[in-house]
Image (cartoon, rainbow, N blue to C red; front, side):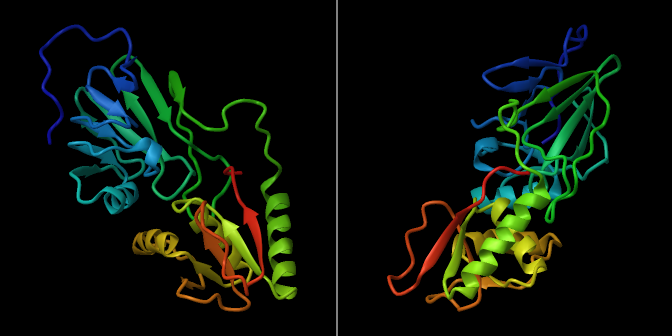
Length: 260
């Protein structure tokens, strides 16, 4: 689908407006809408940022995850740092560091620039390219942990606690059952554990998403799909809401949240 053809008129006073969601005015481009749009930019493939749009702009990795989740869709791939001209604007994606394919969007016209980011993480990631912050006149942020009350501990400190707990659980003959969102957190924690020499069994829903990661070139180390009984000596990564394991299996449930 080509960008919209709009009648000649004066440039809008601002690049964007609110239409029960953020829109780039001149390009008539919806940004991270959760309801179907003719044309929309998707920052990443989490459920609260996608809909069955007629045509979607996103990174190639987000396109793969988006279509895995919602079926075949018409998309325009926007690799990082490769600008395109769209509806009178120059649009460029930059890494957001949140999950595989997550992107910030820089929109520029002849007079001003706007940087939009959905969820983002500035620290390095094991499974996503580190966030990159281009300069812009206007910054629009949509983010879960956007207020000062959310001050997460240092990443290294949190990981050391996780690895210690997982190893202790395995040494005690129990199964560490790590609860993580199926897209993003689950793959991140899997890669972190396997890098420490801890093999991982994944719930089938997590494993399916991990196969998309692998197809996009992101190796998660030594992991496998959970089939029946839990293998001794392996950690288990499951989605929220997963019921307890069989009564004969001792488990220690560990929740991972936030994106530090």
